Structure formats: C-alpha cells, structure tokens
Length: 340
Image (cartoon, rainbow, N blue to C red; front, side, top):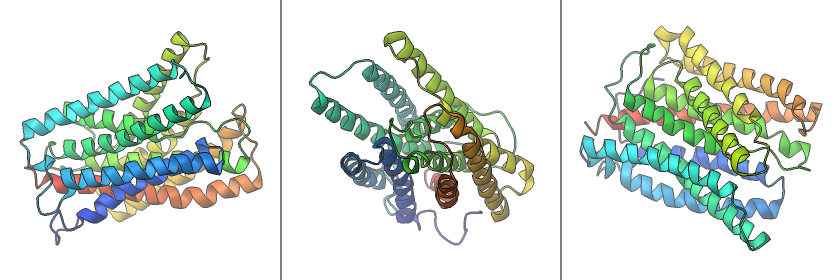
C-alpha cells in the first residue's frame, strides 16, 4: 500500500476528494435507511439532507484542502494558524456533541412537524460535522512529523487530537438502534454499517498515525462519549440510558486491524498486510454480530436469510470502506508534503 512516487501528491486530488465525500455519505445513507425503519418517505427526506450537505462540503473541501493547483487555502496558511484551526475544529466537535445531548433532553414544542424539522436540522448539522472533523484530521496530518516506520510509541498531543477528532466522527457515523417494529431485513443492516464505519475510521487512523493500537483508541473514545451521553440522559431526563451494543461491536474491526498490523509490523505497508487486515476484520466483526446481536433485547432473531444478508453485504461494504479510509489516510500524508 505504498504511495506511488511517480505522481505528484496533488495528481489524484479529485479522486481522493470523491472518496472522502462518498464513503461517509454512503454510510450516512445506510444509517438513514436503518433509522427510518425502512420507511421510504422518511428515508428520502433524510437522504436529500445528506446529499445537500455532501455537495456543499465537497465544494468547501476542494477549495480549502484538495485544490491541486492552488494547494488549498488551508494548506497555504502558516503552521501556527493551521494548528489553531484544527484545535478549534476539535472544540467545535465537542460543543456539537454537548449540544446534541442538551437537545435530547429538551422536547420540541409544536407536535410532529416540529419534531420532524428539529430532526432534519440535527441530521444536517451532524452530517456536516463529520466532514469538518475528517478535514481536521487531514489538516492535522500536515502538521505531524514526517512519516516514520510503523512502531509502537508514545503519541504526541497533535496525534491525540487526531484520535479525538476521528472518535467524534465515528460516534456520529455509527448507527442508532432500529426503531421498534423494524423488519428483520432492515435491522440486520446495522452490523454492516458498523463494519463499514470501523474499517473506514480504523484504517484512516492507522495510515495517518502509523501506530498499531490507535484504531482501538479511537473506538474506546467512542465508548467514553457514549458513556457521557448515557450519564447526561439519566441525570436530566427520565430515560434509562442508551444501549452500547453498537459501540462495543465497533471494537471488533478496530481490534482486528490493530492486531493484524502489530503482527506484521515490519511489513505493515505491504498490500498483503492490508488485505489480511480487511479480511480478518470482516470475518471477526460478522461473527461477533451474528453471535451477539440475537442476544440483544428487542433485536430480531437470527435466521438463515439474515445471516446471508450480513455476510453478502458486510464483505463489500467493509472492504470498500477500509480501502477508502486507507486511501484518505495516505492522501493526508501526501498532502502534508505540500504544506511544509
């Protein structure tokens, strides 16, 4: 998986931007279908919001980061300005998550129409935040030390900041539990999305930081965010807390990625290692989902059709998202050479 030396870092900028926009958008669309419980009207309403945000963010990221001739506005600023902007991005993400928790404790007046409008606004804000955080990771990569050999080492403050940003993006990308009455076919799409998010974010983290263990760190932070959300909901509402099944399941692909890269540390950049990592993560995650989800209260029982659905969709979604995350991670390092 070595970056080609025959092309300048900006040669594939349009393709890389397309991947950065397309992979999260696809995962977000899948999450919208699960969240809608298979209701076409509700799904298309959310899909239009996601598509609109995706187009807007594509233009902003092209202008700010990926423009091949002008080198992107953000990458042309001084290192100090870029670092302050990245820290502000992290702070904005934290404030957004806090705002979402606050909104969850304040029912909207005005009936169903108000709830629908507030849900769509929240969807638009969180979808936009995902790309802002991912762009923050790309810009943060331009401020890290030059790429070094894969190893296990202490992380710098800037690297920890990238982990926090990736964790917030992962938390926003992970699906919510399907609503009551959702068909088994729609409900069993949940592990497919979890696998896609785990491999996309996990590979992005590994390729940028080049340290086995960071994928689990990212999703451990996701669990921490989720625990804070539960605490807030229990303290300020009558809710009994949110289940963490999805967040725990996301640890399966992350741990598999880290284990594969740790075992092949001296050859971590090879295509063989990359393929082993994707296959192992897909197998472990699908197996964990098929075993654990039927034990979850309210989740549809496992059937032959459900198992085939998870296997048939999980493999291409997981592999495609893993490849996308690795591509963006390597692109972030390549773009960093333009900003030195």
